[in-house]
Length: 250
Length: 339
Image 1: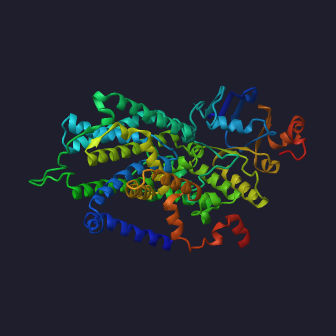
Image 2 (image 1 turned 180 degrees about the horizontal axis):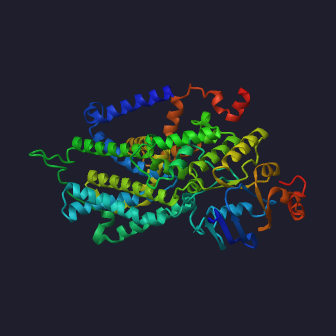
Image 3 (image 1 turned 135 degrees about the vertical axis):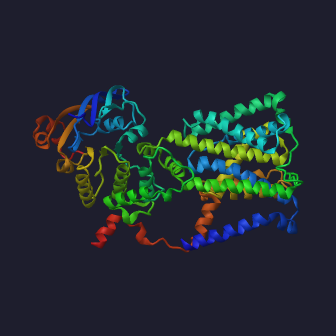
């Protein structure tokens, strides 16, 4: 039995009096796409911030496979194989789409050679082209990231995350604010990805969650309420009360 | 792209040709001291480039680059007058002094960003400035240290020295050109990309595995070294150094050159330096308060042309080139339109 991809033990983080993430124990065995849902303020994004090292936890521990990553800087965590997208999309606005992905693809190199032209790294360039092709941004490769539509920025962020060859991908509301066509593209992309990468998805769009997730964790008020397969979750009375019962939530 | 590239190619050839021939052309229509002013512009353009590397490319506004400039100047002055070194060892001592100072202060400075970084750079340069002013026994303070310059090298009977203003000009031009070439190479390299990534979005950069701290440190170090080289050259050029070179207003002047010339562009800082030094030379004789004009230029630049003279030239050279409307469409729109 190999170690779980990700394991959280008693993870806690508060902001002033508010306990955003409260004593969370969680295990991601790997191999299935795992979604975390919950009403606004449940602590989902804070949880992602803790895992990716953007926030320090007050208590508890985080393990990637058997390695403890608690308290590491986010760039170290990225190098160990966790990539994430952000709820508020975040790319390098004044760089081209290609360069955005190039920087991510090259970030695996330990040494930033100051004298060799970036353009001369053939394998990196090939990798970037392949990823751009996969997410469908090849046509926009020379466009400045700041000029992209919202849906394309989300795809670019995904491409950036993939370029770092992650073992675990944290997707924070990947379809929020997207049109139907854009959502469909993203869902297709996520379904294709889950075959090769472990994914944790935080999402408010229930249609998307129940469409792609194989396992769902429900969070409320910083704690885990329950966990199960989508059918179980949909029938769970507590979940309905806490979340699904509220019409037009999110 | 063609029109723009052609414009800059022609400009580049013209400026290079002028710089290469300047000592022989300038005396035809200007006083010979303009060769020295040109030398001075070249030296200060390296100082401006060092500020631009931090500010324009890495997103860190330093008002303390004069510290490294002053360290370079003192390093070479000590090498020549106190330690009795020959030319190149003294030169390298100056550069090394500046680099070591940057290596130490950088550890603390690049932990901060934004205004906090700016403030700590001012504080560091003030600490060293006050030390240099206070310890007259070592630095000669405000009075400064004058020194003799040995020949640059000896080949048989040929011992060229910076006392020959034409040789001095070409000596400075060669070093400045090499520095700009180096910067051009670095900015195309993975390190240059990392500088820009950190400037654009340090959160995203760290999420893809780049350490913003380390990248900022490299930039700070390289920038300090360049400011140090400028200091060495300026001390050699003046045969003199003073604690005043470390004062923060020297840094501030450099920032002004960079902003007016165009931050984040390779040659913008040189352009700004040239314009404002020529302005100073022309006006300061007739008008004591010419700095008012510099102030107005800065205000106009940051208000109407934040990308500086270089940005203006860029736009001007592409004026008639329309951006194809299609390029603005997203892939989604195109896909829908195309289906």
